[in-house]
Image (cartoon, rainbow, N blue to C red; front, side, top):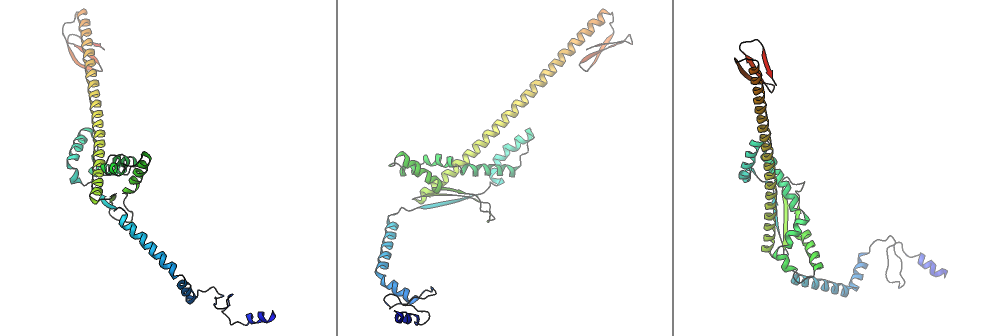
Length: 279
């Protein structure tokens, strides 16, 4: 026993025998490239088999998977030249109402409203559920599968992204994906047009409501003015009638009426220093 132990201790530094005594391992856990190559060569059959299977699966997927096409669009705030007709009406309203119609503020307002609406999950789901492409893709699915497919399509097939802070151009990006490039382009174009029309319609409705509110306020103001004037005329006529009756009872015949003062009529007497005030 002691002799065997002595032989093991006298092995040269950096080598140790395994049970078979034919291979060595580095006591410092360093990788022996030659031994690694030998191990890989021993497993060459398994490696080749795995490689062939993986290549076969990838090839089958490449030939059987549906094509996926993505179309992107970049949207920026509208320019003044694109809003000329729209701004004409706003400027006319501003002249009447006194409300400032800053073109840049209007453009930013419309653009912010567009980006908020186009990113809305409800808007995406509503739009996609009405498209012929989605109806065709989900016609053989049950209701639950349709909802899942539609939700995934809204999240991954119709994507909106705000401007990248690292980029200097303030572009808002939209993308639509489908199994056909023409279909993807139609999905994106129709969605942008749909949201754009909704934004304009909402803004127009708000403008008409504000305009009607302003008209009603002006009509009420005019009615108040007419009522006040009519009341003033009625009071002045009543005061004048009372003053004339008082003068007749006093036997005064030479008099004339002066302008109204503080809601009353002042009667000037020509044959007396006295004045009769009715009010």
